Amino acid sequence: MIFLKHWQLKRLIRKARKEVEKREQGKQGNMQNEINVHLQLAKIYQQLIRKPKYPNAKELMLEYYRHAANLGSIEAQYYFGYHKLELGKFWQAFAQDIYGQPIHQDYAKQHYEEAFQYLNEAKKSGFAKAYRTLGLAYIHGSGVTVQKERGFQLVVESIELDKAWDKAPEIFKKLGLNNPEFFSMMMSLKGTKPPK
Image (cartoon, rainbow, N blue to C red):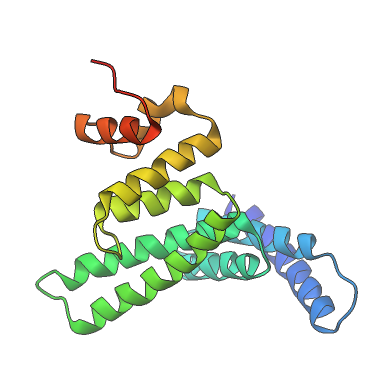
């Protein structure tokens, strides 16, 4: 499998370079092709995280998502923002640990800033997962002051966008919001009363 991934990477990297060169030289290129190639590269590197032969897979995944996001890919904006949010949470927790230093809080802040920038871009485009992820960040105070009502509202809006109220209990459970307080708040925001 690794050999196949290595071959795919080489082929896609060549293709990505050609697309970037075309755009930089002002030649007529296909922006969607460039986005798709970078998304494919990001997803392959994501599969190669923790593989000894690819020690920088996570960093490369992030950079390919960033490139596609900067070209306007809503999917890439979401995934880049999501991964940056996770890095922010890691550094925030590390900063609060016994070994934490002020620099670690700076790392968290930098990752959170990028996360919110890209997640908000995806949200503006109506990407439901971006609403959910931002909602959870507000509910749990990841990179922001805890604002449960705002977070709940974003989660409700994501469910509305997906037209998934029939799956709401499943979604709440998956998000770790499967308790009476959260369910009651969600239902009140939706404008209905929770079942008794």
